[in-house]
Amino acid sequence: MTTEIFITGGVILALIFLSFLFSGTETGMTAVSRARLHTLERTGDKRAGLVSRLIERRNRLVGALLIGNNLVNIFASALATSLFLTLFGEAGVFYATLVMTVMLVIFAEILPKSWALARPEQFALFVSPFARVAVFFFGMLSSAANAFVRLLLSIFGINLSRDTFALSAHEELRGTVEVLHREGAVVKQDRDRVGGLLDLHELEVSDVMIHRTNMRSINADDPPETVVSEILKSPYTRLPLWRGTTENIVGVVHAKDLLRALHDADSDASTIDVMKIASKPWFVPDTTTLQDQLNAFLRRKAHIAIVVDEYGEVEGLVTLEDIIEEIVGDIADEHDVEMQGVKQEADGSIVVEGSVPIRDLNRALDWNLPDEEATTIAGLVIHETQSIPEEKQAFTFFGKRFIVMKREKNRITRLRIRPAVEETAAAGKGG
Image (cartoon, rainbow, N blue to C red; front, top):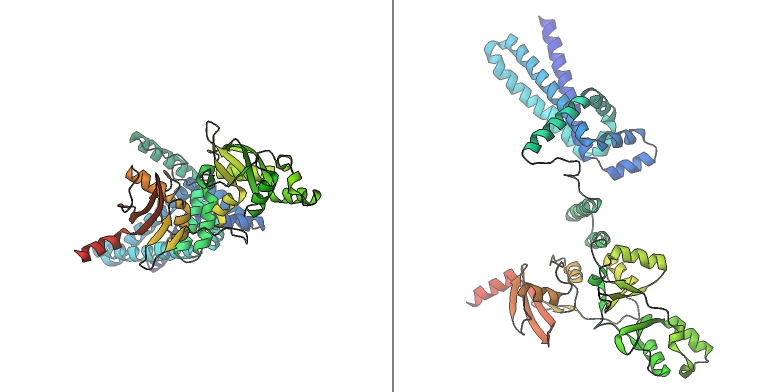
């Protein structure tokens, strides 16, 4: 009798250990980093390759582990009940339930899952042979169970296709970086740079271009001395040339080419034909994504393109630097003109020029103003109010109080922005 008790107790402990492996393997395999596995696999770690192959069919793996885990848990509980009934009679059911609950929760749930979450890659590599055996024995049952579950759910109109829960690579990267930023592992600047890189395929050149009203260009029909003087005074390396109207772009001149021409002409600007040294303008649609435009810039070894709308009318220009700034932030050099677009006031409010892009404001102040319907902060106010506000008018949306400070004709040129909570509190004190 005593021998049977010890054998039964030993079997129960072995089953609890198997439950430990099943639970920990499930957590470790689902929490493991694919990028880390890829790195380990490249260094020749065969177990990393095994883990990668197993998680390629994650549903089958998890199903096999759940079937095995439930099987050993139920078997261990049944044996424990039989053992305690032998030892304590009818009260053994209560004792078996209490003991097995404590044992399974601590040693087969909390302990293995905590370990697996703390070191998912190490744990996954350690249990990979066990996971392969589990899939070998229970894989077919898992596939059948998953098929039955899909059939049941499809009756209620729920489709569990492979892509249902899958995040795109961009969303997964963005979410990971955001979580690491909140935990303090990634600084704001690095988070913004990664976010800017991931946004390139979502943004269009019209979102970052210099609008034609702010575009600096040269009249090709001006006297050569005037053209040369304007180009040399400009802070930009490349300038568009126009004839007749500013929207009729006929070329792009590079300051370095102009300096070579001046040297060849013995510094006599009157003899220079600027059209002969200008390159042919490159026109791109305003709907081109920044990802495609960046690739086109690199492919053509170009730095500037003229942006046109669907009718071929000039909207503005976009440069390679504009796109790079979407990733790394503003790039300033010793020839840049400092544009005062955002100013922090002593009372905590922000004075913003209407032409400041929403994305730049969000990045600088860590705000989350929407930029789907408007590119500039003035455009956002006009879109939300469905009107062109008058000076001193104030509006509240997206948790901010927008006050129109200056308007020129139909353009909002300056705004004051402060948190809406502060504005409400100030109004309450004043009352």
